[in-house]
Length: 84
Figure: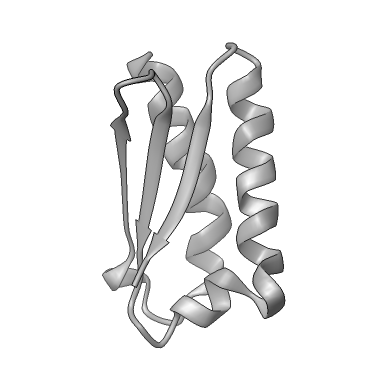
């Protein structure tokens, strides 16, 4: 599980880091919920939150779709959230 989680964090990092203007403020953490779902939390500078979320949430929806597709390889569930 830990290897898969690290891969998911790396995937999300590769997608989000080029989007933000303050990459030093980017923090990506993963926790496992009680039901076994991996919850990935993205913390960015408040100026960059809009870039990560996108218009009408399109960017974060795409990030979630990619993370779910990557997690599906090992039959895991994943949630991706942006913390402001």
